[in-house]
Length: 148
Image (tube, rainbow, N blue to C red):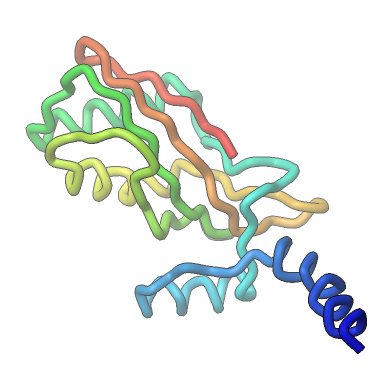
């Protein structure tokens, strides 16, 4: 009997291990995810969300926007994690590492530039997926890396 009780959780463990749940607390974001993502979010995908424009053009656009908002481009590194929906909306922006003053301005600017992102693909279908954006501010210049 004890063996049977131990086997059942072991059989269901992979289901919980590979389930991709949401940690969305905002009701508006949750509604968008239910409507556009069919309540499915991906952490790992075949094709990452990418930029619709050249990386250098995105970096220049982001720097220009930040300068217009009096954001100081001091030497720092920050990594954000956010969700790119199937309609190229950016939701659930959170800091993974780094520290920066006026973080709210940077977060708002990233959200406003969501139209420059192409959604992820999995099995040939457009899906909602998380992406990590590493930003390195150095001497009023920006270098980005897009990762899973």
